[in-house]
Image 1 (cartoon, rainbow, N blue to C red):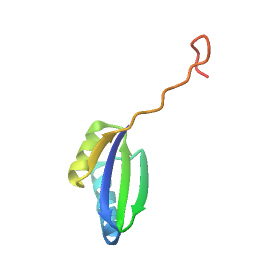
Image 2 (image 1 turned 90 degrees about the vertical axis):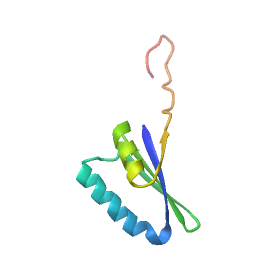
Image 3 (image 1 turned 90 degrees about the horizontal axis):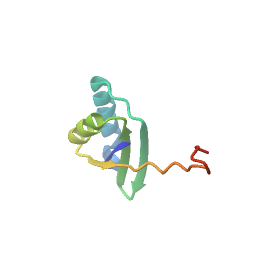
Length: 83
């Protein structure tokens, strides 16, 4: 998973969300996940993409930080088959 973290001030959230939606539509990128948390007056947006190209372009446009999330290991049952 390719994640981008963007920090915005609470008073700028609506404007930034409109800009992000327009950019996603124009570039025909569809996030695979979106999460939003607040710390004081700062909003932290985490947006996941299915490709490195989409994450890179989004991060560049919105001054985001790219991170690669590690997917949890798949557990295997005895004998090597997936449980």
